Length: 120
Length: 109
Image (cartoon, rainbow over all chains, first blue to last red; front, side):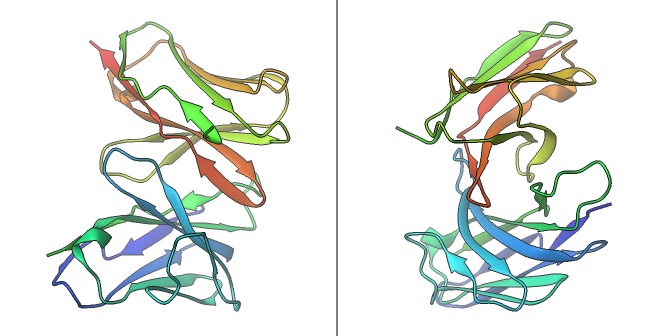
């Protein structure tokens, strides 16, 4: 149980275009979803936290107008990178938290497989 | 000082030996910690979580938490080549996960 999917798994786009990444919880209701970014040889950095039906809370230094997050349902959150530039190339990972399956902590986040974005 | 600090490694351990991974944290009020494993190009996988002082064992893995010393560790017994990965020490606080930079572990056959 507690499977999270992301789509697409990788994307290549031209500079200036927008890219949408979907994060879905497949078998549980995700009351909270998190978006992370990971640059090569670095750890995951939290970008924003979103609760279903509410505006996302962005971490310091993350531009909310550039990284648009929508969490319209308990199973889907989307991250749109607007006017992408080469420096936005990174590994984007979402995670979800909700009613945990048996044997799991409420605090546990279930991670999606990640989306590798390359901006040319 | 970083919130969660780990030696980046690489740490090389012979197959069958015990691998010891260490982590220190700065916020004395921290309550819960997770250990995740991340293979190259993949997202993190949960190994275990710990929130009480002392040891917690799960199969070949033992997590240790010492709140007085602000220290967390993960022991992997009978190391296997498939254990080769980056291990992330993660603090849970304020409803968020804060990741350490990870320790790269290589198990030598």
